[in-house]
Length: 164
Image (cartoon, rainbow, N blue to C red; front, side, top):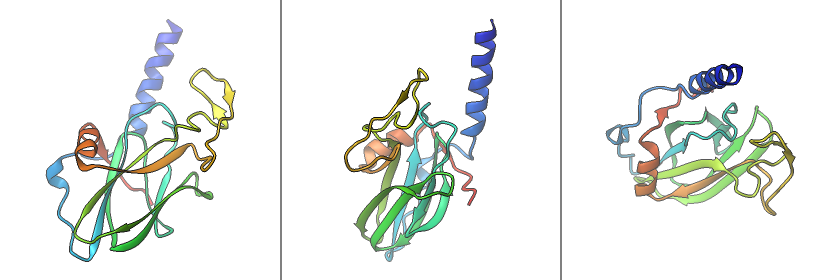
């Protein structure tokens, strides 16, 4: 009985952390101006890192904290753009570089890094594991995602409060 009660309390706590704003609606994604590249950056709901909200930065300027199960929309001047993640205001943990064109919307997913999904921390079963991919030891990765896949992933997500 104690385990069931603990599990229920944990579930309530996770849903409160993922709170955010309004449910995703494709109509809320407006067309960007010709000189700006628009980014829809999202993080699906996962238990991996559920209590963390990595900070997303564009051109080294913090833009939004991204809890699990949320998304946000932002713009940057077209051209070479660096999108990066950091945890707890620390060093950059993962970066994505690209040459992005104005007038277009790009979808970027923050997800667990497959090579380090439980690196340097406690895995689902509480075991300390240190696996690392060769080029990135971050527990998260940023990836460009095609529009159809992104829209499917975004359906259950809520807009992030962007507490920067």
